[in-house]
Image 1 (cartoon, rainbow, N blue to C red):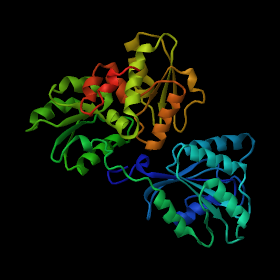
Image 2 (spheres, rainbow, N blue to C red):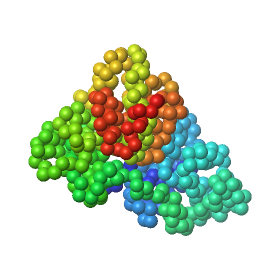
Image 3 (cartoon, rainbow, N blue to C red):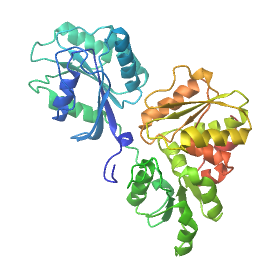
Image 4 (cartoon, one colour):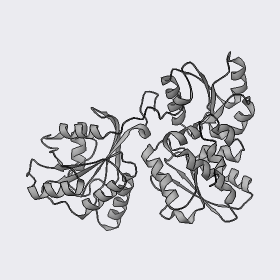
Amino acid sequence: MTLNTTPRGERTHIALFGCRNVGKSSLINALTGQQVSIVSAIKGTTTDPVYKAMELLPLGPITIIDTPGLDDSGELGSLRVERTQAVINRADIALLVVDARNTFGQFEAQLVAQIKERGIPLLIAINKTDLVQPTAEILAQVAEWSGSDPYLVSSTTMDGIETLKLALAECVPEVNEQLRIVGDLIAPCDLVVLVTPIDKAAPKGRLILPQQQTIRDILERGAIAVVTQDSELRATLAKLGTKPRLIITDSQVFAKVSADTPPDIPLTSFSILFARYKGDLESLVRGAVSVEKLVDGSRVLISEGCTHHRQSDDIGTVKIPRWIQQHTGKILIFEHTCGMQYPQDLATFDLIVHCGGCMLNQREMLYRIEQAQRAGIPIVNYGVLIAYLQGILPRCLEPIPGAMRYLNEPT
């Protein structure tokens, strides 16, 4: 990952759905002009969702997702279908592929209902039109279910592919220029200090993703970014000729950075900024306060949106459980998940502690928060929770207009 590479969480996610052997993989290859997915006449060739990040004109940076067939069967097939269903939660655009020789059946109808319920833009492509033209009955049926006319394509002859690409481009969500990581909180030529301790879990020679994205946002605003480690923060501030407009820190070193930052310099964290940027800061702040309701035997789910090599003092599996138990004085039960999904029964938990979600797109992060709310479970992210446990959350919310009220309103 470089500063010039669009992170997966920032890309438009286009997911292809359909029954086995309708030509999803072939259609992806036709749309991208690359051999992204394995193509075979054997049903069930795609056994897991396949993600491919790329630049695709006229859409721009995208992640295209190939999925197993909706009609996969057997024990393994059910697991594959479950993974396909999970992809819906992260899709910005859904493309349902139907074979021109088949009818629009129950699997497709169920998927369309789910997609419509979640307000995801939906296109339907009738593939393999080089073999047969769909009947008027099929066209009418598809239009009835989807609410719009389908696109007739052939991934073999490339007929209709450019038209479909243009239609996909029209569905790309408009960028909210007001929604920034930090750019709306600073002005051109402002000085921003980023405290970025070297993370042992990150590959050697790289900054972790939230740090990269924040630096990019500062530069795009025309402001000045100064990067230092927590051990050098005091020396950095002493050498600067002007007072920083803002200090942004990694949450793991909150206590030291807060102690070393003069009270007249605003302070916040990468994680809190990302909670506002792609999540729901209000819900996460209220989730932090819910720590006070934990009792002996309460169950806490610590969930991460990606996988990484865990270190001996890992933030999710070691530090946060230790800090929560020290704060509450209670004996708690912790469960950990990472990757695509929560456990099925969230109602068994008393609190969900989620990572910053830098690898998740906004749609999926909001969906995860929504899942917790539907189950009646408070949810908080790493940075908001750590600031609360260390007694500095009010200070870290002050740079964000209106955020302080979340602490003062009843939960």
